[in-house]
Image (cartoon, rainbow, N blue to C red):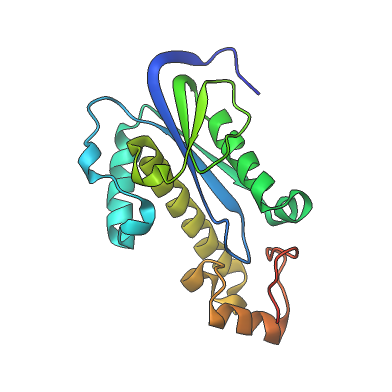
Amino acid sequence: MFNQNKLILMYSVCGIDEAGRGPLAGPVTAAAVILPPDFPFTILDDSKALSEKRRYEVLSVILETAVDTGIGWAWPEEIDRVNIHNATLLAMKRAFEELKTLPGMVYVDGKFVPDVPAPAKAVVKGDMKIREIQAASILAKTARDRWMIRYSWIDSRYGFEKHKGYPTKEHRSRCSEIGLSVIHRKSFRILP
């Protein structure tokens, strides 16, 4: 819900992107990022194009210098209830709601825009074109990866710290052997 106390930045741009649509387990995570005009934009790229080490280096710069950031989550039970598409939009809306500032324009990676109280446009392959979306891509990916690693401390049977819930051969094999965990997406085709 829009907070009336948000500072309105009419000329600022917010980028929104997600991580975790394809995994068999864990949340889908979205990030919203507003960068300052003097941000070192050349360090940015789509999170998938950066090594893990480089992603964390760039993440530090984003967190230190961003005008504002927000992270939103949609959990496995929500994904199962409303489907991955709607859960992704929900996570994006939640990320936007975490912002303390209201941007003048929102660019969202993909074909669809979440319900946000600001002018917004979906941009196909926006994570290759718009720097604020690239920053959001990095924040969403690192936040989700860290969550999956930490969850592996609670339940080490599936190797989430390695594959982050993605449908690797090892992950599917463990699911076949020991069954599904509470964070698996039951609406996804996991077992053969």
